[in-house]
Image (cartoon, rainbow, N blue to C red; front, side):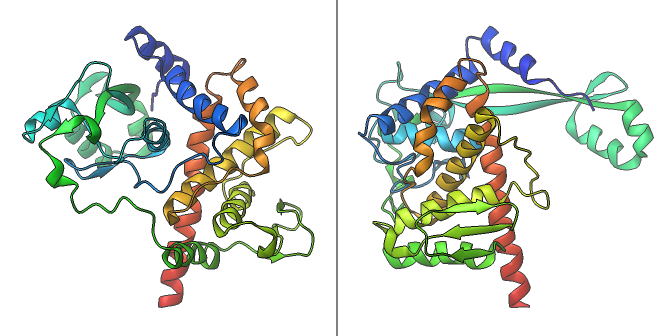
Length: 325
């Protein structure tokens, strides 16, 4: 099946006045700058709810998930709730000031072709099911491309407060947070070893996550964010997501550290914990420098981190069900 390349996607968005990678990089660089100068110690403010749309009932994922978390924190919005202009007005709400107040979300759109002619999804899907693999390759194709949409935070919306009045925007209590985190550790399937030395690491040769004792961490959030970081590395194993790294190349090591740090952020958010930046903060200059040569650097890391956190949570779900049977 035919799909557009990243280069085609990028050029398409730029032609429409929207630079996908520039948009991603600008927001993340601002947050990393705060971490670097010491004015912030976390990647995401997970005292907020995960970004969602109260009108459609959907939750934002992947790149949008991360970016909206950061934007909500940077702009001190009360709720991490968003909707399009059309959705707001359609639901009977109004915008206080639309000019300059919107944020962009990114999504894929896909076109379907039968025998080279554009077709609707229903026709494509029905024919796909009836064809052999050889026939599918010969007759069917798709083309994916990125689009963006402007959305507005609830801070800029009037008349729709009833849609979020029951939303608890505070972090879970300590017991609930720790219970969720403990479930991840108990059921993800990783071999976690507590050792005397005060260094956390994932050891590929033994396929174990090595952790210091909890007394070495200033808080539960710091302990779990560090452990989740190492779980991010744990997913690189060939029996899991099979990320290949040349440890002799600092740029590849730095990229893997970013994937692990973002994985930790996703899992901390799942538990309602702050994603305190770990030793990977030492790589911030490498991450920022990598953008000089590759503007897709952060975007690619976000996708891999989402895959890693999804894999971990999927293992938790599978193992919990297996034990319950």
